[in-house]
Image (cartoon, rainbow, N blue to C red):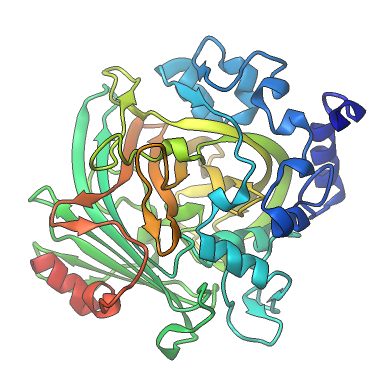
Length: 460
């Protein structure tokens, strides 16, 4: 009955007040992180209006409902502007479920353990890079559980994209033209290995100057199979990654310029390397970071989004657009508190992007929505993620001793060209590559993450 002490708008007013005062602490009724540390339960940190979509909308929307053009106005302020237009004008539907209160379902288990273990030990040096209190590269988990500014919020996204020390994603992609037809379909594999900022607290191979190795190679269709790329990220976030690619037509590995981060890797795809995890470039090659607000948000973060057991390859139903092929089915819930972060590509004078805006769930430091604007200030693209703990009523996928957690799908919509890229983290793609989150006995570095590896993958 404690909720009666607070009127309906109390939670939103407190989030606004925190933004105005520059308060970093997460939570409204109580500090969030002590609750997470004690019981992994975020419910006592927020009033009902921030935990219940039914309370927030005064009964207009409840779990089990579907957001459509007829009722989207009730949640317009909980969606990024492109998602709102998708529902309002393109036939998109969004399924609504109860809010997740158990924070263990929002992380890989080891990453949450590292976050709690290392809480309070991260510092920014004079250049803006993250180090521990004894001057070492970051040792795992989110470095700033309650970011005081935009750079700290960006660090949580940048240092460990997928929240695992190693990840391999088997990705199946469909690219939808403005008329609703399928223009392209690709299979590709994305691998990322953290050298530093690892949950095991170690530095892989002793290379403290490297943050991560990341590669992507296409396995289908035949005319694209073999195209492969390798990014080597330095720990110093002022440095641009080294980007190399192997193109089968030229039968050689060549280095690409830094500004190629804002171009599609293959025809028809709308996302760029810069878009990855809303932090696809080193964080100090962007600047003018600002936390411009705090608000609740709808996010696709719950286990209902895991398709294991419902589809043998974890693929998703689709709907909407001119031919009912444009959008994935997703299940969204009310996220009680998001940081709204803006930044500009200060290190890229020729970048077509003018700024980006990111909505970040304060409970796990992960983005739930992301849009970019062009140089004229016009909204350009959205990159909407969908996450899940890999456990539902039909199947549980383990990551060691615990249910796995990762992204499951993305919608990347260039609203100016009205082209949609939608892709899923599949169980397996062409070539027999499977998604997974542990290194095991394989030498993944030499197998997937060197120039020799991408040439071999490209010519296989």
